[in-house]
Each structure stands twice: as structure tokens, then as C-alpha cells.
Amino acid sequence: MPILFNILGPSIAHITICTKFIDIAAITLLAVLGQRCPRLISFGWSSEAEFSEGLVRALANVVRPWTHLTMQLNADALRTALAMSPATVLYTFKRHFTTADWDIFFGYARRVTTLHLSTEATSTSHSEHQLLVNQRIDVSIFQVLCKPPDSRPLFPRLRQLGWYDDTAHDTLSFMRLLITGNPSIRHLTVYAEIMDVRMLSLVATLGQLFPSLSYLQWGDSLDTVLTDDIAEAFSNCVYAWGNLAHLECPTLNADALLHLSSLNSLEYLGLTIPAILPVHREPQLNMFSVVHGLSLLTHSHQSLTDVAHFLELIVASPEDIFVVAEMTVDAGVAAFMETLSRHCDHTSLHKLHIMEFYTDAPQSDRERLALGYNALRPLFSFGALTSLDIDSGRRVLLDDNGLLAIADALPKLESLGINERCGWRTCPLTTLQILPKLLSRLRDLSYLSIALDTRRQYPEGDTIKVIVENGIPEIARVTNLNFTLNLLDSRAGTNDILHVAAFLTDVFPTLEYFSVWSLDDSPLDSEDNDDEDTELQPSRWRQIEDAMDVMRDVRRQKRTGSVGSTASGSDE
Image (cartoon, rainbow, N blue to C red; front, side, top):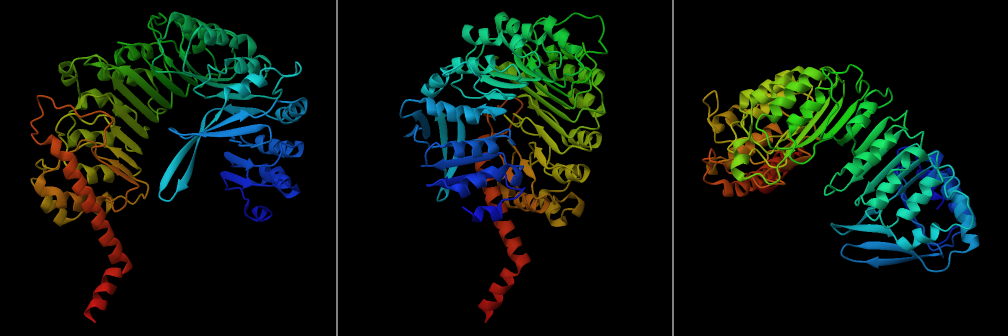
């Protein structure tokens, strides 16, 4: 244990300690961790020693400096059981929780200001494999903690509470006890998979219980049907929070949204926008004037056009916008982009993520919807954008000139992704030569996700063989070791495999991550897709990737001189 004192430092972020005995040296070590490792974000402790007061006080010193803490404590009061499929360690009590145990618990709990309760996943290595192990606290432990020996708050200094466990509904009584006895909580994060009457009754009390709340993040299941009762429960709360800075909740009604829009403290808003919006004749200059981040979702059968109607009500200067809508209208992307350009500050927006999804639309309707240059053109006024991610599910009809126009208008892009989830859904109009041209314009780019067709005739009339032989300009080569390239559902010809591999290896000497034909959704072959060998493309690109690996190995050996040394040795 003493050797740890010599290696503890400010750069350490993760510590796991396994020991059989708890002596004075171990407790002393724990007492100084907060000062020696201020950046620590996870801490694991496993011991066969008894649950002593000295150990608890030392661990309390570890809790205070960090907002995220994973603490594993095998005490004489706890039993651990291992279950498989998936691998889970379950913590339960193995004996009655005594008055002495409560005294020790209260001694620890009164120091805690941040509490995160969740099913954590930890990884342990075995040879070349990695095993994920879930750690779960049995509901019986929460049931015991719901019956303290007196009326003292369990965590009297609690300021931040996070409840991420997917069993949150089963431990609702303990959660209610925590929040009822802690009016000083400022920061509340909850994930509730079930939004029934019991959960909504808890939501309805939040405004009264936490008048000083500044941060609320309430996540729900994607399957949750957003009823009027849910909107009313959250809407009634927001009127009590005059200093709210961050709000993420399932939904609100129009009146609550109007109330929030005038808060000078609100910096982030995330919700499903109401089906019925506040009515105004013109945009309100004070609506969400200080909001830096917007995360907007739509109800079922609502499109980006409905999000555009919401944006028409405000004049905002967000730095980050995330939008999810159903893909039902052909002009949805264009309408959203045009409204965004008119109502959002052009110099403030840095990140834009647009996601469209389809539910029960017939395939003929999906094939009809396309994403082209004209729909994206209103974005060109946002010259400060550093991240652009459009995942529309539409067929992408951008060619080389269209992508180059994006690069010229948005020169600060660090990340560019177009239809990463399901690909371009047709034979791409872009050529392989777009890659070096994009890189020469976007010098800060480190993430690129597009599709291309290596078989297309290049604008200059050259073949890919000629282009490879001529070489790639130095300015078009990637020097960023952390570059990620995803070529989605790109196309390649049978005779071009080695030339494509050589071209990509020349442009990207090193890649942190390379992916192609690894789509979350299967590509859509439309009537415009005359590619007869789509099913052969994944195999061709695997051959290209294998060839790239060989070429990089050869170049690495040349740089180190190992190829020359081997040749000289064989001649002798």
C-alpha cells in the first residue's frame, strides 16, 4: 500500500484497489486521495475487511471532490452474488441491518453532496477478450434504507442526485425519501423507463420540493407515449423554477414553454415540442435569448417542417442544435434550413445534428425523398460551424461540386457526416477524388462520413490509375493521427481494388478508425440505382481494407529500414 503514495498524481483518472486487510496506511491513503488526484472520475474499492467507522470516514473524503464515483465495498453486512447472461454482480444484505450499521451509514452519508445511483458497467480483461460486468444493488437494500431509525435526512448535504438505473421504478419509494428530505438539491438527473401514475405523482411534487433547482434532466423510454398528463406534470413544475439553467424533460405544454422563453437563466432546453405551439404574430426577441443548446424532438407524424414552425417563434443564438423528426415531408429539410438561417444567429452556431426517421411509410415514399444541394444551401451562412451531422435516411444526391461548396462555405468544420446511419441509399454521385479536395479545404477536419463511387469518371477525365500514379499533393494528406473515416455504402469496381487501396493509403497514412458498409440500417436500392452488384460491394471493400493494411505495413517497414536490412541479410 505505501508504494501508491509515490505514484499518485493529478493526472490519474481511474483507481481500483483490491486488498484483504484495512490498516492505518490504507485509511491514510484514502484520506489524501482528494488532494493528490483532483481529476479522479472513478474509484473502485474491494475488501474483505469489516465495515469500520474509520474506513467510512476515509471514503467520505474520497466522495466529496468528485461528482462521479463508483464505490464497491464488500463489508460484513453485504453479500455478493454472481449471475451470468449477462454477467452481473448483485449486492444484498446478508444479515440484519443493526443500529451500529445505521450509525456508520449516517456518519458517511452526512458528508455526501453528490449521489449517482445506477447499474454501472465495468470491464475486466481476460487474455484478448473483454468481459463486461454489471453491478446491481438489490431492491431489498433500498427497502431497508427506506426505514431509517429516526427522522434525520439520509443525505442532509445532498446537492446533486442522479438516478440512472433501469430499475428506478422498483426503487421509487427510496427515491421519494431522498428528494423529500433534501430541499437543497440543485441538480437532478433521472432516467425513468416507466411513466405511470406513481412516477407522475412524484414529478408533480418537484416544483414544490426544489424551488431552487437549476438543472433537471429527465429521460424516458423511446416507447413512452407522451400524454397530456405527462405534459401537465412537468409544465406545472417549471413555474416554480426561476433560476433554471438546464432543462431536459419529455414534453411541456405551450403555456409552460412560453414561460420558460423569458427566463434569463435558461441555457439549455431539450424536449419534444408541443403539438400546439404558442401563438405569436412575429418572433419574440426575448424568447430563449440566452439559450446555448437546443435539443428538439417531434411527436409522431410530425416532420422538420413542424420544428421550423417552432423556430419561427424565436430569435435565438444557440451554439448547439440537435433535432429529431419523422421523415414525412419532401421539403422538410429545406424548410428547416431556411427557417434556421432566418431565425438563428449565423456566428454563434457551432454544432448542428439533424436526424430524420421513418416509421410506417411505404418503401415507394422513402425512395421519393431525397437530399440535395439546394436543401442544404441555406446552411452556408453559418460559417462558424465546426460539426455538421445530417442523418436523414433520404437518398443523397450530392456530387463533388456540392460537397466542395459545403467545404468552401464552412471552412471551420472538424466533423462532417451525411447519412451515417443508413448510407446514401443510391449509387453516389461523388468520386474518390473528392477526398483530397475536401481535406485541402477543411484543414481542421478529423471526422468524415460520406459515400463515393470509385468507378465514376473523374471531372478531369483521368482514371483512378493515372491519379494514383501522379501522387497526392502534400496539402491533401491527413496528418491527424486521430482521424476517423467512414465511407458508408460506397461503390468500387472489381479491377480498382488495389488502386483504391493505394489512393486511400496515400491520402490517409494513418487512421484511428476506418469503416465502410457498417450501417445501422440496410441500404435502399431505388429505381434510380442501376448498380447490379450492390451485394458484392461489402466483400470488395473488405479486400480494399486488407490491401490498405498491407501497404501501411510495407511503408512502415521502409521507414524503419527493416525491409532493407532483411534484403541485405538475404543477399549475404
